[in-house]
Image (cartoon, rainbow, N blue to C red; front, side):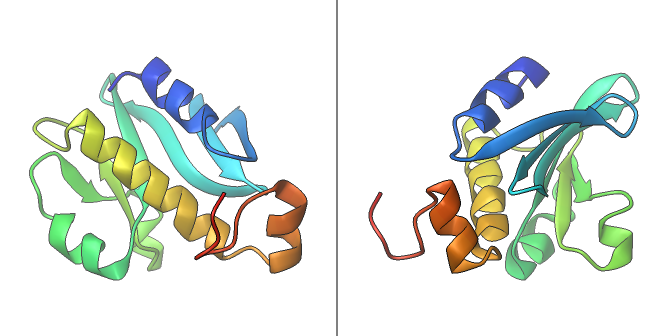
Length: 124
């Protein structure tokens, strides 16, 4: 996945915003809470996303994937796809969508309604 493809995909998710910060990283948020980051890793794009504790354990040692620098060292369950083989584009999109869902689920019901984000088990 390229940085442009990453940004295009993240923009399709409901009620997201994009900022460039932290050394020219593309940072995607839902209700001002980060769910995905694309930054540089030795001149290559690296994609960072939130995961469940199980996914963190299963994928954390997969070639091309590592616990996300800074975030994981603070006990947060975030991974970074930084090299090959890593994840396929389809799998990376699935994990970005899961990251979005994990962050959105942490929002209050009121905030989710304001943003038009369905509650879990509601149809869109």
